[in-house]
Length: 272
Image (cartoon, rainbow, N blue to C red):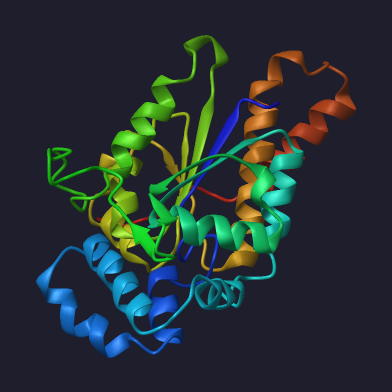
């Protein structure tokens, strides 16, 4: 096991769309969704939409079939498998829901590569209806973060993951995400960590407004192919840095480490 923890967002990061929108659109309930969207928080709306789907005769099997067709870039699964093979601890922090994520991961046969999934609860109740609940029960108490939606603060989740790891383990984090909800956890990363925002998506735009607020190194990506390339290069970079004290003074090994480092992606040049 390496000393690297990789935290993935799910929608538009692991998969190439928003799973909530995908299910609603594919099942033909887009108009109703858009009509109700201004009236309640997104997470609460998804629970209501699952009730509407159930009342119209849509089964759990129908939802699963739609999730099995979800688009994903062909380099994402190899990237996940490679990172796991290199000993990284892979986790998911997502504002989707547990039912959608587990159904997709199981279908793609990659569930076993993740040690933890942090997301909104999603389960099938006794009536055969899918329930989607908030990660933070905001009806009883606010999570207190003004940057995040009421149902989930990803920053608090990253804080918990960081605090659960012993200082002696000296773990380093790589965080991958695309949405505005991924900005708060970006602010929690340390100088030895790395942030991989999806280029020209909301979290990228937020970072670019004032890059000086981010302590971690920033390395952008645009699609699954670039995600794989940058992620594996960063894993190699961390491994070389952490093992530098053990590298022999042999000339060939020194030249190898220098050539590998020179091939790594440069820190993202962002303008305020």
